[in-house]
Image 1 (cartoon, helix red, strand yellow):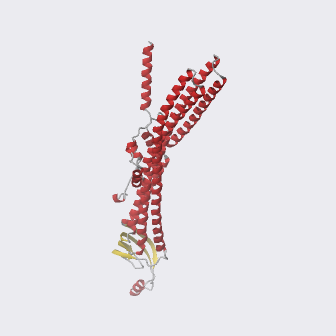
Image 2 (spheres, one colour):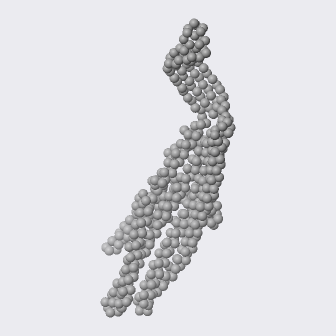
Image 3 (cartoon, helix red, strand yellow):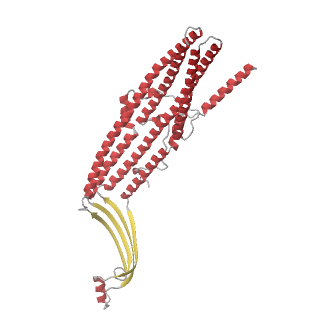
Length: 452
């Protein structure tokens, strides 16, 4: 009966564990939730949409504009025409008051303006692309922040488990010494030492519970949910670049912050082209038609139609055009410096991530050997203590060394893993690696699609 009950209990436990694992949030799921709901992501998506509306505003300058002008009312006119008409009919009133009606429709199409409008459209298009890359940059930033919070919850959970195991071990040692002391076989010093180590272990557990709660709060801030059944992600370090130089080279090619800065440099270059356009003539095609009645003091209908090419060329504007041109050239120079600065910053971040990851991976190899060695020492000391060949202090010290090395190993493992994610974020490939989809705008347009 007991055997059947044990088998049933084991099977039930396995089912519960499998069920919990099936509902565990993976890292990609957590990152996807962050990107879908985090206000920072929504803000940069809105900025991208605003940039697109400004692009469409500039694009309108390439299309015809149609204006209608109408007027109606009493007009008194004294002109050579009215005086001549009055003299011809023998009427002394050379200022007739007539109720006039007039309507005009005019179509204007830009033909040439020194490429100013085209340059403005291209500038706005470059800013749209810059805004898109800022979306991807923010997505990479949120992905690495979420990865850090996710791994930190796992790390502190694991450290808490190790600390609780350590507390259980020291509880066992304290009880063992108590039992010996009650039987007259122990010393007061051993009892005090066992109680001291037990208290220290209990304090460590309490501290780790607090730090775990902090990690869970950080996770909830990013993801919007309380972490539940998080699963440690697997990672193939072989998928990373072979060396730091290769990683930096990829960063310079694919980092979205760098790409955004280059887009803004392109926009600044187009602004220079636009700033030169006022120094050139402007040509417009103007088609107009007018229909009027009793206009300019002359009774009768007045119809007029015109198809004109109109040229305008400003000769003086108080130096404003020169100032605008000089400002555009300076902004272009500044944009080049911004690109250089962003490239240096992102290259530095890539090297930092590579160094942290490489150092942690080396520590993992060393610490695994240290943990194995400390386990052998602890086991040997425990046997010797039970035989009276080793002091309690030696045993407790060996247990503490094992606890510290196990904790250090966990920290090194998660540091190496986070370093890899941080490296991919610097290269702009973290979301792609995780299979996470960056949220899209409801409406995406480009200059070449002629969308409104």
